[in-house]
Length: 437
Image: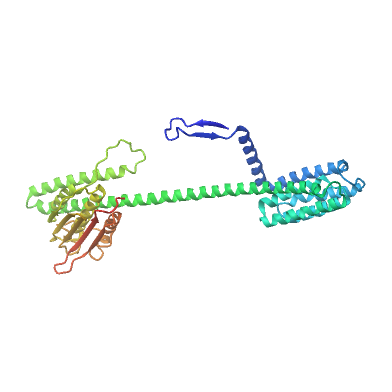
């Protein structure tokens, strides 16, 4: 055996890789080729094996058997037939192993009874090996007892030395062949188990990859919904408000156009940053902009106000040590709640955003006085009817908010306020002691 240490790896600097000996590699390659040929053409292989041993048995029947036989006067035709009986059945050993063994044992029983004691009886060991590889152990035990019967008959009919010297060596040979067959069978079962385990692991790996891809697609769809939905709602509100003010106050119209340009550029920048993640050829050193955080809430609220929705915000407590993931969740929930108010609150709607930081986590409540009719703030259009539902509650936005909240074991409540005056309420709570995913 040769050992080759890993190069350039500190993890394995004290270990060595053991390579198989060239002779072992050659033997493994030869064995694999033989097995592959056997699997492709089993009948051809059986014919080759059977033909070889039939030839060997007939060569021994030509006169060599007299060198070891206690009775050399057995007729030649009988020796020829017994040689065929001990070799020809080998062809059916895989399909009917016990029947083949019984036929060969009967022939061997006749051989020992007559005193020929043909060496072709050793071919029985091939059948015994197949039985050890393929059949239950209790069948192997019966096969061993069956093969011992001719040995006892020969020892009784033609005693030469002590009975144990005539029987035990053959029994030991049978036992070694059976053990070898069991060892090969165990090795094959172990290899098959490893192959099956590798197949299952490969399937599990593919399933995990598919789940990860699905989760990533969901995350990207959620981000795109939040980015595009909010910014388009703001742009629509600004455009409608600007067209309304153009006739009476050109300066307000110019401000609306400027705000539209700013919001559009911001939305385009966020969308490009998100889509860059999907590019296979994206450079590793590409610029990475930070995700929105709690410090960006004021800018978000100012943009909604510019779109025509009056928003009052209050903050209590201090956002000490709130992880970035929770900050993004709070930001997106507030963004989605205000976007829905822009879409569906009606022209007279107002909104209130209350953020509270405590020792137990962060709580956000967004309420509005919208009628839920889909009229929007000064003209943001009707929006997506799927977001409206029974007032706004059945669309992708609410689903995205719930998914984000569940990542941090938080709670989210969304629903209409009792009227009059009515309106809509979104309540979010993220516990401080929840584990960061």
